[in-house]
Image (cartoon, rainbow, N blue to C red):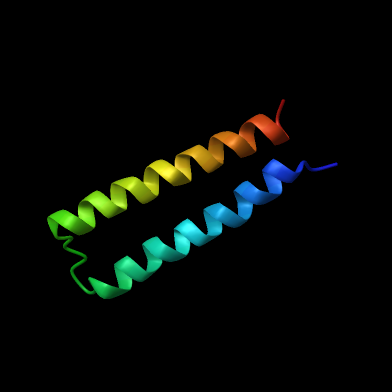
Length: 61
């Protein structure tokens, strides 16, 4: 059975990926990020990595 933390991590990761997708759409076609967008992207990617760590821990003990 899949744990609640794993399920939560999947949904949170999807929301983070959506935020990244929006950022990429806003900066198309060159995808050049401003300094503020770079900071936001880094924070989003850090959050995504944490969700992946949760998934690894919960799904592959």
